[in-house]
Image (cartoon, rainbow, N blue to C red):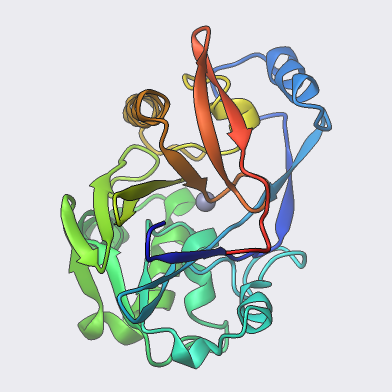
Length: 278
Ligand SMILES: [Zn+2]
């Protein structure tokens, strides 16, 4: 993107049962969507894609993957960073989109070790306010405690150094944070701009394209505020189709980037081929 170099990092994948994946669609319709995309109709391979950004002399990562806390087939970001010629100690800035485990667990190993010891960690103010709130933690029903406790495990030891950011601001060279809430209260997307070029990283506002680009009104089980998530998804897809903007995703098949065009009441995803050449 202009003078900015982007590298998609593969953090592995995990199987997810299609049954129960989408809250507001019949399983038969979900299976049909999988079939139309030539995907397996029982489980999908959900992949994870942190994005490395080299911009303004800084090495920046957006999200960190599952670390050593996810399925055994996940957590490959550190190895793939090294394969891309980069030591984790040389990452300058880590930008977090939201506090779900598959995005933050790569920050810290289960034994407490910080994986990126020299990085400044930046998080959405709205996420921090929600997940780190003491009253919410104390009143949380058992089912919600895990996520709140996990946010404390990751951020607690560095809490005083974490930098919170607001939407509609350039938070790092060429990277502007935008409101993409609904999936979680402070879920953030990023517009990456340089030299008149632009790419929007939608993160989890749009999960696997075969389901949520094709059927933008479907709600994944993990969308915390389903109606708001749907409105956000429509807004991002409308904008990307109208402006022919390249998108990056977190849960699309690697390297998780491409364009969308209108198709009936939904959209069609046109993946960008992986390119070994810059
Ligand atoms: Zn996610």
